[in-house]
Image (tube, rainbow, N blue to C red):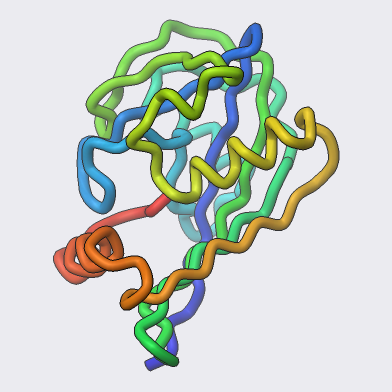
Length: 172
């Protein structure tokens, strides 16, 4: 079965060497830390979507988002594509408002980029984006592909697939 790729947007909000993460409230990946973001609505630009999603999840308003990466997250079962997300990742260093966990977030906070591997419990796409950002010093544009087979990745992929069958959301 072929699935149409789903468009999403997320933000890498950087402030004084720290990055903003949200702890996901709902599946897939409930309880894991991720970049704030979500689906792009019909007629909405990816930039408008990332601003809306960040505000809904964290309470802050982005002032200067710039496109940093395009992430493709693809799950396979053998030759079958189970789902394919295309995520426009924006970097922002300026924002206004007060940080608070919104509707989709269990918690929010800034984490030191130099210590990010110690956070643990990161979603796969978040881990890949943060590694690319740290390795590149935040420069240039990145195309990141995370392609996983259900057999090779085991329980985490099965959990995501099950939650998507139950109406789950964005894996970012």
